[in-house]
Image (cartoon, rainbow, N blue to C red):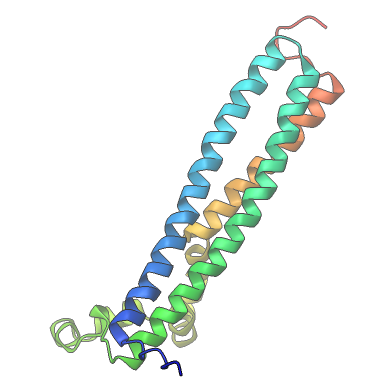
Length: 178
């Protein structure tokens, strides 16, 4: 007969969830750093290929850049989903273990008269209470790093597509003779 495994302690659960979140959040940023390096190398190669009038090679580099952008965008979306899984697990563990967030501690509510907890409430709830704050909702969404990462990747994909079309069409750089 086999004995059942011992129950997992709350500390082990918290450690696992925190490790999960930390690993995937780090992986998300490392993916973007890799993307920046790849884009830089491809842009330098594209510039050299255009200057040397090797348009086929410039178009090939833009095609590779577009492929890498799409691939890493999909990886970024996957990593964002895994980070949110870690966030939800940590939130559930905090609730079940009665962990009080620093922003909601009684000391700070007393010291600041509840102003700090008001600042930490999600913007949607604050906007529902105060219509004057609703106009700031889009700014909060734009300021999130997930939006910025995806916006930069989309811009990169569009630039690679434009570079591919220009190189394939044979558009000469400024100052070059056709």
